Image (cartoon, rainbow, N blue to C red):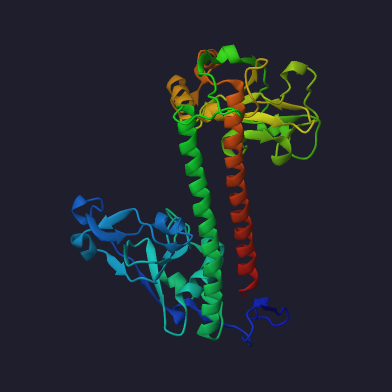
Length: 426
């Protein structure tokens, strides 16, 4: 590729062999624009659904990542008669609520009136215009009409200005390159999903003892023993500081907030790898006992959640980098008793299906679910020998490492694509 940063309508990054400025055209000049249709009342009448004709929804386009192959509904012949079928290769764009998201149909699909189909004329590339429209999504959303819900229409789209290459061959070259990049991202996404599914399956086998490891001499480890949570862990006090008493600027004491356990912290918590706020300097920490600062091996458990999937979610402290760290609002600190737990095993044990199921049973509440220390204390856990704990934790940690590595590759490729979209278009 070559670079050019002087002419107004010339991209900064360009394939060799292409010259001259790009030209501005209205979307309606380069493509036929047609609104989807689905007219029966009521729309949920079952006589229209359940056939073999894919019926794509707004959410399917929003989550398509530019290529529409999945759909959540189907129509029968009666449904097709009151809808509109778009051919393979058509660009679909969302025009209500979620504005300006696009994707190219990989198979023919019927569409409701919350979507618009865009089919380029023969001298323009559907795939290229799709990528170009992806860049325009924030502008379209900003320009949408505020009504009962945000919306745009064909009158908005028809004159919408685009800057495009003069030749279809350059459009196709750009689209083919970006499609290859998307293919790489999709490949990494599938690999990550496969690794996550593998980990889930292996954890189920390990914690039901369907799969057992042996020691270094090829001998079986001892049988697992049932123990109560309170026989393994002791609780330490936490604070009740709110978000507005925390800062990411600077401070002497880090604070683990329950919301971050729910949304971003890894289950094996290493402070240098996480973004953890400090307690504000004007908040006194003098009353925090030395014994209540977090230590490696501690479980920090979120005691409330709005859904069963996250109630009792926890992290295990692995590395604090020598920094003073406390656990805050809506958390418990559970500290393992001497010699009971191998590093990292507690976090995986608390993620196991059996333990998660037991926590869901004891969780209480309506809008917000919670667990208490007395409830958690009585929780029954099956515990292997410490040496087997070490083997299990090491194996699962290695799997997590592979998942993180693939996730980082995917993130970097997505960032690279974002940069390309900025430099390869005007």
